[in-house]
Every structure is written in C-alpha cells, then in structure tokens.
Amino acid sequence: MSGWSGIVGQAEAVAQLRRAASGEPGAMTHAWLLTGPPGSGRSNLAYAFAAALLSSPDGIEPEVETLVEARTHPDLVTLSTEGVLITIAQARAVVQRAALAPSTARHRVIVVEDADRMAERTSNALLKALEEPPPETVWILCAPSEADLLPTIRSRVRTVTLQVPDPSEVARLLVERDGVDPALAERAAREAQSHIGMARRLATSDEARARREETLQIAMRVSTAASAVLAAARYVEIATADADALSAERDEAERAQALHQLGVEPGGTVPPQLRRQLKELEDAQKARAKRGMRDGVDRILVDLLSLYRDILMTQLGVGRELVNEAMRPTVQAAADYLRRADVIDVLDQLRLARERIEGNVPPLLALEAMLVRAARAAQRR
Image (cartoon, rainbow, N blue to C red; front, side, top):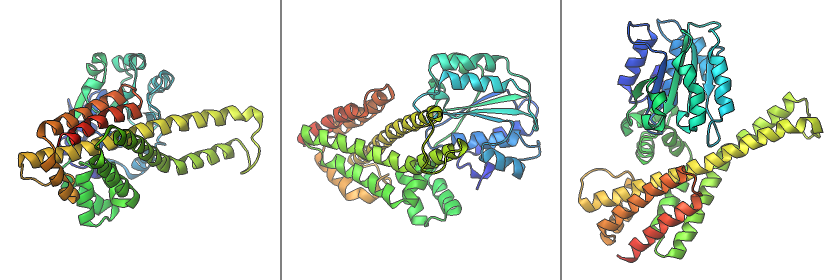
C-alpha cells in the first residue's frame, strides 16, 4: 500500500492535500506544515503529497510514485537528519536547490522531515526561501506541533494537523499490508498506541515484543534506590541494543557501498587520501546511533507512561480496554498496592524525564531520577 492509500486515519488531511494537488482554486499554497504526534504518518503523508504535486493534476502517476519512494525524483529535495539536529550547512544546501526551476514536473518539492530538529540559526537559513520562493517551488515541513517551530516560520506556512489513528485502523493496515495475524495486529496497534512504525515492528519482531515486555516488568520490580539505578542502566542497555540492531546491517551496507564507490576492493587497504571520506561516514553513523539510542529511551518512557496510565485508570474504575491488556493481572496488582497520588507523581516524573532528555540531559541521569521516585512510591504501599 502506497500513495494516498497508505495513509491511515487521516481522511480530512488527505482530502485537503488532494484538493491542493489537483489545482482546485484557492486550495494551494507555497509552504505547508504537517503536524501530528510521532507515528501518525507525517512523513508518509508528506511524500504522498509530493508524489501528487510531481504528477499531473489528475492523480499520482505510478512511475513518479516509484521515484519518490526511492527519493530519486529529480524535482524532489529532502532535508532530514539521522543525528540530533539538522545542520545549517544542510539547510543552506537545500535552499540553493529550492531556487532551481523544476526539470520534469510542474513543481519542485522540498520535504523537510524533521523541521523541529533545527536550531534557531538553522531555521533562519530557511526563512528567506519561505518568504520569497520561486513560483513553482513547494515546501512541505513536518513537525510534531506548530510550537516546535519559530513564529516567523509558522506565519509563512499553512498547517495541516494529523490525528492519532484509531488502533483498529492501524491493525487493519498491518493485516492488509504486512499479512499480520489479526489478533497480533490488534495487540501490536494497541501497545504501540497507534504509532504505525512501532506497531509494525511489534507485530513482526519477537525480539521487539520481548524487549517491550522486559521494560515494563523492570518498572514493576523497582522498590529501592539501588534497584532504580540498576533499572536505569538496563534501560539504556536495551535502548542501545535496539538501536544497534536497527543500524548494524545498514552501517555495513553503507560502508561497503562507500568502499565500492572509492574503488577499494573488499578487505583491501584504504589509501590515506581516501580515509577522510570514510571518517565522515563513520561520524554520521555515530550520530545516527546516538539519536537511535535517545529515541529508544524515549520509546521506553512512552511505554512506561502507558503502563502507569493503565494503573491509574484501573484505580479510577474506568471501564475500558487497557493499552497493556496482556499485563492486566500485573496492572491490577499495582493498582491495589500503589497510592493514587503516587501513580500521578510517577506519571509526572515520566513526562519530566522525556523533557530533560529532549533538553540534552544524559538519558541515564534522567532515568535514574525518574525511577528513584517510582521506588519511593513502591515503598509507601
């Protein structure tokens, strides 16, 4: 499933962008901002919109869609980062390409996947291009919310807000696109809290499901400051291992491709004059690994938020299915022995830990502080 059909639970947003791509009077503008929570499909929608803009007004053309999916269309420019932040050099390079006229399509489309990962100086490098773009250039920015961008950027874009898809819609996508068993797809969609990418991973990887279950069980065993410190260290290990598992194969393929392009045979010695290029690749891979670990820690915190939210909802007697339905006995036991005020405090600490990590606090320290508070809650039972 690709193009518009691969967008889940965003009927209103898709309809708006389809009208713009079709040339409906008043529906089009030169700069767009797609906002929505992680996993809502911002990037997928951005590239579906890009494919429509690079096709005829009648609809997405299969050959254009193929080129966009491969990110090789001559009139498509992408700006993203696998590190922590988009650099100003990357932004300036994209601005230069944005000034060029389209070569084969009716538009030149610039997709900025992580517009929230730009420092103020980098955002200002884009500002001039957004203020006075060539008539055929269209900018598509993606970010979790408008608040993640400078007011000067927000004032120059039209915002389309994505919603959190219903778990049933995500489960249906997993069944139809990936051939996942319906029961497993439903559980994965619910435990991923409708994050499409994470739901697919949980549905297709036994290791991913095992790691998630371990992270939740660890939290339920924390009862002392010492166990909190050990749990924090284990969480960092899990996040690091998860990031390494995702990047190892890709890193090796990138290195092999780089050596091939440099004319170095497999196993051969890299000439001194070519080592700088490999060093740049290694630095980029390290930056990607750092971001991957931080993202992994954040995902653990999101899972823990779902667990303590389930505990609180159980204490309040709210009759609904739990996110962690498979752990209902554990959730019920925790609801019985934890004080409601302590559960709320742990939820606040989880949110604070996420903010601290986003603010560049070392993940281990943020996790330790959060888990020590959880341990105190367990001691008061």
